[in-house]
Length: 193
Length: 193
DNA sequence: TCCGTTGGTCAACGCTTGTTGGCAACCGTA
DNA sequence: TACGGTTGCCAACAAGCGTTGACCAACGGA
Image (cartoon, rainbow over all chains, first blue to last red; front, side, top):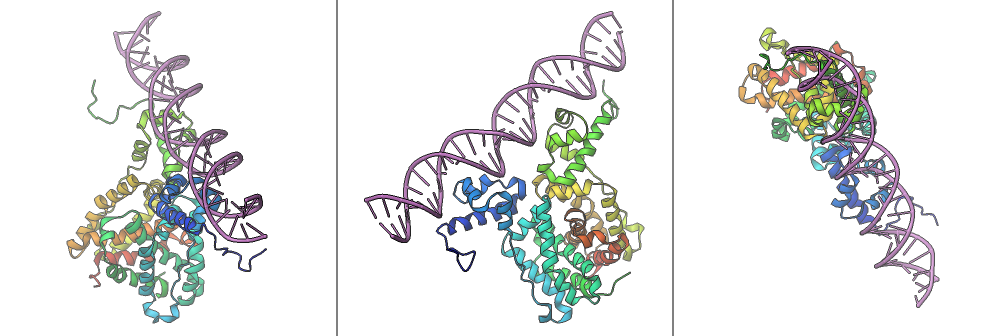
């Protein structure tokens, strides 16, 4: 018999499935795609490697399931127009500190084509619309969204992936104070050409 | 007999050695550390994998030799103080477009501890001194250098590694026009706290 | 001409990887 | 109690990896 809701049979194995996903996120974030082996992930989750295959098909499927994420970016209309930059930086910083999904995504995106496309999709689907509503000229929205990404992802890269000591040492408020105006300028300042 | 100059015996194998390094840079830049296999690099260079081992010891040695680089950053004293930002961005953009060494370094640094440390060293040794000479308060130099790195590496990440289409589409002059003032502010603007 | 050094190939090693199929234990239901 | 589906472990596979050592060909000074 078919369920009305397609994806919630409330299986007995739910605990194992989420244990696998948690371990996978941790390993992908720490090691990247290739070095995060299914065997290591399975050991972290205290199950047999073959279980990973049964529940997620193959390694790519596991990765896709582990990094499914909704950025939940704030509605720009809910902020004064000259505070959108600071608001976005604050929100991103919170996302990055909360869990390891974005670190995993960034680390894998740097070496794995599928990971890069996933990252591309997330920013195109979730950041670009915000830029469209906030930028002076909608035609410039993609370029401005790319600039915002470059600064936000650049900070994440130096702070959470490469771990440059002075980037790690920055207090969150400092990050917001420095990057907020930058992002604000990329969003709303007139084109500098 | 010892040579007076320790590192230039002008060997007959010089052509092979540089062919290996060129192939290695290309593969590391395209695939990252793990997927850039010695076998693939050797095939690109039209030699046997064992030659790579003989000339560079092991894979780590090959990587170290392939990404040895001097950024040759311009002397900040040679520019008007309010043009240092634009000057640095222009220089970095040139470095990145010229060859694949920095792309290789960035891609590997994202998944490989040794690569990350190498990158850390390069920026600490080559960018930090510049900041020290240009920042208002030398004590803030590390933090400001980290901010500059975050923006410069962030652009490289989105443009050359993740290849976000709008980041790839930006003309070099546009990149300088947008990022120059940002870097300038990170270097010389008063602390925003 | 001989012979040591150098440049290069070949075949194999031990190991790890993703992935598969078989089999035992458990569960809820009839 | 019997049974079909779920959950899990185990052993193994083929392929690919970094790395090694034996071996051959060409060079160059004596």
